[in-house]
Length: 471
Image (cartoon, rainbow, N blue to C red; front, side, top):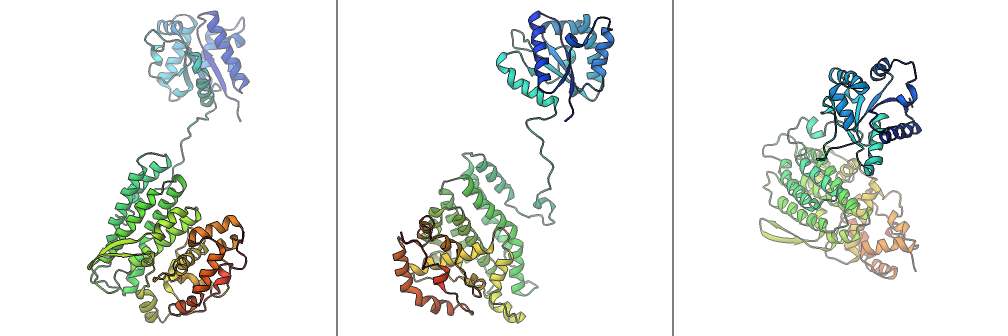
């Protein structure tokens, strides 16, 4: 690092003032600053006027510190003595040169009104206040940072414009301003954060109509559905960040109560949609299916199990053309005929599940294994409770070839992690889990075989049943 060189301009007002300036110069030198001070550097026989001019105009001098008190102001304004000579030279530099930040006023005295004694030529300059002893160390740090050009607040680098600016689509991410307001509020622990979250969710519902399939479409219906799904991805990513921000910065589950109500409104939107084609709302089925999987996955990842239960225990109320309806979370597990039936036949595809293929291709926020695990947890949650509704774990296709124990169940060999399984599956012990599993295991293959056209993995291996904690 280059050693900065500074010159101190001041008035010999009193012996005490001279001593203060000398102490400042000594402290600066001890902190790596090469200080030029007349008490050290002006020798008998020197031309003091030439010395002063050289100190002010010398390009090697990076800063000129002007220590201002009442006497300095009077001498500078009246052009008296050495101070008058220095101030004449300095004022010319201040008025005529671009590099005005070279000159730093240090205030040592104020009048009875608290106004700093500043010479006229420095009236508009920003100064450091050394008029009170209690300010000394904080102002000294500012001074030292300025000399070394290391400000406490660094100007951040210029980034790239947000995507809604650079994209050609004029309505791209219309929720962004609401999201940014929420993001700022929750990261800074503002009381308005929950209100901004509610505003964001309301805006999210409003943009859904942008993804309807209009009458008179020109492409095949499956292409239309996939096109809408692809265009929705930036909103999906924003929603993922929304959930992660809540998990990171708030322990308040009321946010998730609001999201629960929001999901019910989304269901009502889909159920009341005017359809121009029998498959024309299936993009929304996929959107809700994917959002729900990511929501539960993020909550499990962040150990927000009370929030998980909000979404898995409560009943969703919504409206359709026939009136008020209700359902458990299995409503999000819709089968997409447009993709896994019509598209497969139209393209003569041999893929087992194009829906799952799309889900996997879009999984760029974390490992797809996490989604598979969530998918199976949702299946087991309903199955073990012996409910009349089911969740089809469609992602099992990626586990059918090689059976592997799921991460949560593998870790559940310890008591600490088995408690996580107890929370997620709503069981009290390993004995209860085994009892319930024995009761329903014959139904697993019989039920899944009717929905999935591939070999079903052994759930006792997936669930690590032999090695789960028994303490």
